[in-house]
Structures are given as C-alpha cells and as structure tokens.
Length: 298
Ligand code: HMG
Ligand code: MG
Image (cartoon, rainbow, N blue to C red):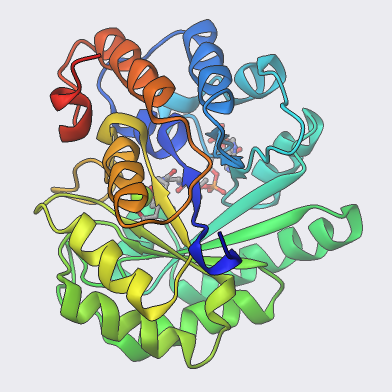
C-alpha cells in the first residue's frame, strides 16, 4: 500500500447524522454509538456540535456526550462550533479539535447561522486565534459548494474564495460540502479542481449528501483528481435541518465497500461498521440508508 492508496474517512454520523433525525436518542446511546465507531478503525469521528440548542435541539447534550465518550488513542473527535461561545463550551469539556462551518452561498449562510458570509468569517477569526493559542486543530467546512436550496446556482469562484479564506485563516483542512446532494461527477470534479488550484489537494476533503443518488459517483470522480479525505455517515443518516430538502449523507458502509473494492485502503472494519449501522437504524426506528448494509447477510 502506498500513501496514495489510503483514504481517511471522516465519520460524521454522530453529528451530521443525528442533527437531522426526528428521533432524539439518549446521551448513553450517543456515547455507545461513538465508542462503537471508534472501534471500527476511524481516525476521525465527528462527535457533536456546540451550536445553539434552540437551533439544533438534537445536539443540546453535546457537553455530556463529549465528556462521556472513550477517547481512543490516535482518534480525533472534532466538534462543530459556530462562534467563540461554542468554542468555549467545547474547550470546557476538553475538545482538542473543532470545525467551523461557512458557506459559499449567502442565502444558505443566513438561514443556517444567521449571518452573511463576511459576518460569519468575522465570527470565526477569534475562534481561529484562540485555537492557535490553545494548540487546537480547526477544520473548515464550506457548504453549498454545488448548489443552494435558496439561491440555486453557486458560482465556483465563490467556493474558491471562501475556501481559500478559511484555509489562509488557519484551517488545516477544508471540507467541501454538497449540502443538498445536487451535484454530479462533472461539476463535482470541476469544483474540486478549481479549489485545488488555490489549496493543496492534501488539505481538501469532500462531503457529499446522497439526496439524488450521486454521492458515490461524485466521490469517485474526486478520488480520480487526487482527494484522499472523504466525509460520510454510518448508514446514511442525517442532513442539515436548515437546508430545505437535504437528506442523508453518503453511507459510510457504501463508501468503504467501494474504496476497498477498487483497491484503496481505509483501515475500517466493514463487518463491525455494518453491525453499528444496524444497531443505530434500529434505535432510530428506520431502515438503514446503506445499500451495502442491506445486502449484507452476515
Ligand atoms: P443567533 O440566534 O443569531 O445567535 O444564532 P446569537 O449570537 O444572537 O445568540 C442567540 C442565543 O443563542 C443566545 O441565547 C446565545 O447565548 C445562544 P439567549 O440569550 O437567547 O438565551 N448561543 C449559543 N448557545 C450555545 N452555544 C452556542 C451559542 N451561540 C449563541 N455556540 C448561531 C447564531 C450561529 C448560534 C445559530 O444560528 C446556530 O447555532 N446555528 C447552527 C445551525 C447548525 O448547526 N446547522 C447544521 C450544521 S451545518 C451543516 O450541517 C453542513 C455541513 O454538514 C456541511 C454540508 O453538508 O455542507 C457542516
Ligand atoms: Mg453535511
């Protein structure tokens, strides 16, 4: 195996997955979910969000969840923070990696975080400064990179501009989010290539929602361009509550199956992941969103 064959999967189920599920699951079940995922071999498990509990009641228990999880050696547990208040709440329980989240579309930025793109960056600056002082890693999301539920088309130049700004401000990695799963391989590839003109490919990740069944095809196109970090959620849970019509993330089981099938390494134990996905789906009272999971007979 060469480095080029390894794909780091960022498991976002406990955050992006659970933030949009109708069923609010208990703190102990969330802790059990994250511990099970840590046992599957992920290097990064996004644990929760320190956002306003009025905006995302599903994750109001962020502090209890973060405090309760086992921190596996070598595994990072980033948490979303929209502002300094969120950062301080996260730090109070010992978070060592956070994620800030901006958007390439003005309309979505307003709906999601009640701020324009420029205002949101003004809010992120003190977070990035404090994180630098504290030695905390900051991941940066850019949402609506292939289309916006409110404004429609999003120019690639806006995606490049916002990504570049967050990277220059100190984010170690930029995750490019197709929040409403509207892209197809051609524009996904073109968008990634455009961003990679300004930011090293090694510092980019892709984050596809599977609303229109395009996520795996989009991921493959982006892998061909050289991206090696992919976000996904166990059993395809989730979506953004402030993106009209958004549905689940691409299912991690399906991503692992595809990657291993084309000869890439993930370090993930698929059988354990399938068990975790089944357990979670049962808890949420619905069928798994992973086709690989459904097809598995073990
Ligand atoms: P606001 O209402 O403009 O905030 O919301 P504010 O600063 O005016 O404060 C209002 C109240 O919220 C105050 O409380 C603050 O204390 C409180 P009150 O005095 O009314 O009792 N507050 C907080 N409480 C706890 N933690 C905080 C916090 N901040 C303020 N951090 C705000 C602005 C950003 C807070 C709000 O809009 C928010 O929380 N938005 C988050 C929405 C969200 O989580 N969306 C989903 C994540 S993004 C996503 O899913 C996309 C992604 O997956 C990538 C992709 O798919 O593209 C990442
Ligand atoms: Mg998302």
